[in-house]
Image 1 (cartoon, rainbow, N blue to C red):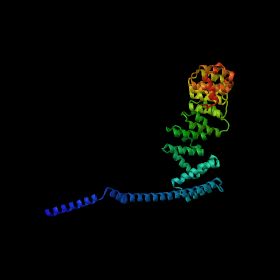
Image 2: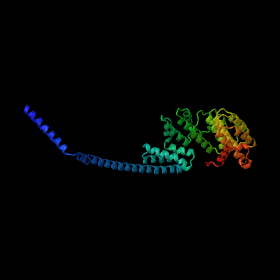
Image 3: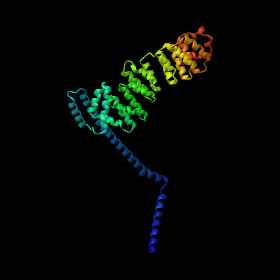
Image 4: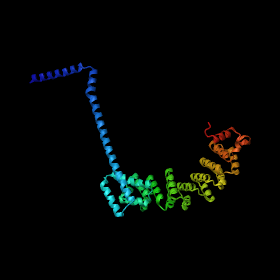
Length: 386
């Protein structure tokens, strides 16, 4: 027994020694070459083959998807053309839609989304009125999809539902939109406001009572919606000036400028005397844009008590457009006492616009003789001057 164990140990030890000797017989370079030949190269070859096969499969799948989408789009265009120019009544239109649904993979989400987007884009392509578009939309049952989106927990889904209502001018869901105005998410709230203003007959009442601040993008959208939907200035525009919301008052002022409406002296005085500097600034800019020369004295008076630099600059820009001899005398005294370079530059610009001869040759007085004032005048005349 002991002999057999000893013999096995000796035999195993001999084999280990022989393996060690065989490994030692290879140099480091030989080991590396064998590793590259039998390990790395086969692995890389398999990886390349796998990558090429994957690429070919993805390409085939992409072509198949594109082919299916094109087929659905062509079928959608055909059915929409039939619905736009129907030969029969409502029942025949419903049958045509059901046949269409049977011939396309209508139950697939991507297919429904594609058809829905096509219908919404159709409004822009064909300049359709909202009632025609909404009727087609309902034939496909998409109004249920829109209403489900409005109840979705995710804000971007609710926003998408609001966008659909806006496209459709679906006034039946006004109550839902009114509730969305009280949403915590500002994007949903903003989209609901824009949708309501776009199709609600009470748009100015909605705006006047809106309490949240508007961002620049929303302001532009609202101005565009109101201006393009009503070619003449709406009678209720002035009610926006009485809103407690700064953003809405500013929107009202911009609308008056957009329609080139005249602000009364009472309105100008009230807006410029307000404590909110953003409203003051916008009202002052409106005076210049509308060239309300009768507000010249109000602007001069306001400048004397104004504390905000940006508002002061707005006053000078407007005075440049509406000023008279009294304005010139005011600016002459101002240019001597003003220490702020930005404001002084605007003073020089205003004087140059009202009476450029004051800076020319022998005509200029001692007030305009300093190198600083002359340098500013040169830069006003040539902004690219170094």
